[in-house]
Image (cartoon, rainbow, N blue to C red; front, side, top):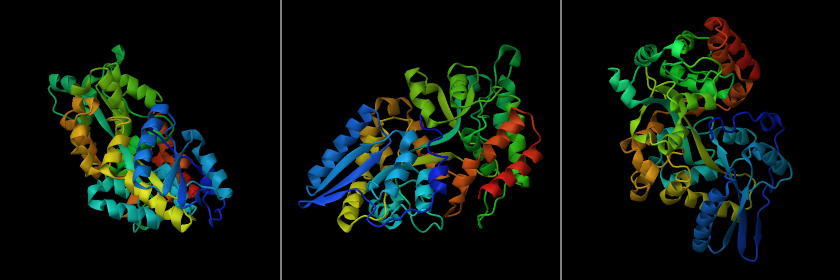
Length: 431
C-alpha cells in the first residue's frame, strides 16, 4: 500500500548538488538508443505488465531499447543518490510528486522535457489537481508526467448512515454529528477512525480539514503560516472529533481495520481501502465524502515519470518518446488497473474507456469510480499555493512538525495553541 510513499528523503535533500554533465548510464550503440526505466513496481505481475507495454513501445520505435530497472521502494533514495554521484542515472524514473520535488531541488529533473510531454498529451486531458502536484516551484513548468495516483477522504458505510437517519456527510458538522451518534465507548464502537499517529498519515488527514478552512502551512511568499487562527480552528475541530474516534495512536492498519470490521462506520483513508472492500463484497455499500467548510479539500498524490537531466540528445528524445507513450490513455489505464480502484487514473479519458469501466473491481463501484477519479480536481495539499508548489514543504513534512502536533492534541490531549506554536518553530527551523 502506498500511503506515505517517499516523503522523508533527507539524505538526498541535504546532499550537495550533483554534477549533471553526461549523467545517464544509457547508451547509443549501433544505431539504437538504449535507455533505462527505473520503477518501484517490483512485483512480478506488475513487471510483466510493464514489460508488455515496453515491448509494444519498442515495436513502434525500432531504434529504441528500454531496459526495466526495478528497485524496492525503500531503496529508491539510496539508489538515486549513488547513481547520481556516479553520473549513471536512468533516463526515466518512476517517482512520487514529493520525491520529484527533491530531485528538482537537486537539478536532477529535465523539466522542459516533462512539460513538452504533458503539452503533447494535452493539459486539458489531465485532472487539474494531478498536474498541480507536479508543477515546479514557480508554477511555470512540470517536474514529471503523472501516470496514476490516489486520493483520500472519508469513507462511510452507506446503509448504517442511512438507517440512522443521516444523509451522506458533507460538512464538518455532518461528520461530527454522525460520529457522536455512533460512539458507544463501553462497547468499543466509535463514530470514525482517524489517523492520529505521530507521522505523515496524520499530516495528510489533518491537511484536508485545515485546507478546507483556508489554512495552509505556507503563504504565497513561502513563509510558514502554521500558527494562525484558521489552523487553530481546524486543529481544534480535529481534537473534538477525536473524542468520538477510535482511541490511541492510529496508523494505516488501525484505521483500515476499524472500518472493515465495523468498529466505526466512517474512516479517513486513501483509495487503497477500496480493493479490500471489494474483496469483502462491500463495494456497493461504500460512500465517499470530502471534508468541507469554507471549501472542499481532497488530499491526493501521484506517481509520475521523471526524465533526468544531463542526457545526450538521442537519449533525451528516446526518453521523451517513451514517457509520452506511457502517458497515453491506453497505457495509463493498464498502469492504473495493476491496482484497480486503489490507484486512480490521472487522465480523464481513462474513466471514459469501455475496458476500464468493465474491469470487475471498477464496475463493482459503479458511478463512485468516476466521482473518485474526478475528485482529483479538488486536490489541495500543504505547500501548494495557487500555481506555486513550494519545495520547502517536503523538508517541513520530513521534520514531522504537523504529524506531531496532531498526535499531541489527540492522543496526548495537549493544548492546541501550544502545539501550533511548537509546530511553527519546528517548521521554520526545518526550512
